[in-house]
Length: 279
Image (cartoon, rainbow, N blue to C red):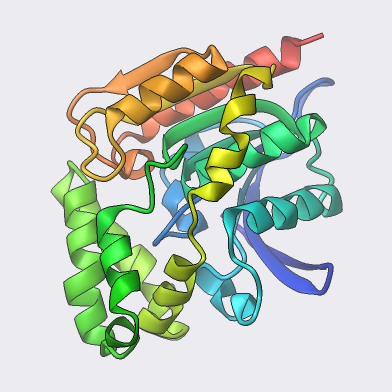
């Protein structure tokens, strides 16, 4: 996917984009990643989806790690960055597809600025007070010790176990580790991860949780039933609150966009079709 960048409110924002707008009424689809990933999370999904597809990189993540220095990286602020970017690239409104932290950002946008969200697909994402996950909490608590991890140790002791636990496809886990390690290798390693982790606060999703029932757009919730980090009951609760179908992927773990791209793409296409036909 071609990589693009532009400056929005003084911040250089990056994203991957392909495809063009189709028929009248078609809306772009924007993909939102989490931690410790980047837009590369969606590399197996994007080719399976039609129309204009954009995978946005959160400020302070991926190759945008340097842009996060000294900035607020909370999910509430990421939602603000995202909305400014959506306007800048003429992608308002969009179908928002979010995994992990990206799903939390999508919930905040859908609740606080309903005109920005034409549809919603949430995949094994943070919600309510179900996060940060225990490994991230432990690394955040370790603080200085985490920051001082040599790059090779950070890769071997932190990222590799997260990928191994979060994938049900071992080969895909190895590929994923290579894809998501590179930005940390170039931009600060464990120190960059610690900055991301310290910004995580479930208050961001708890604040919008009471209002999820007011989100009136086509929606789907997909969940790997064997996710060791974010458990299935969270997905069930999201589906109830959004009055959305829940697609449970038996045996799938956390990194569903990488292990089960066909299922994610199918849900995205369904929601995009419903968004096109919405009055």
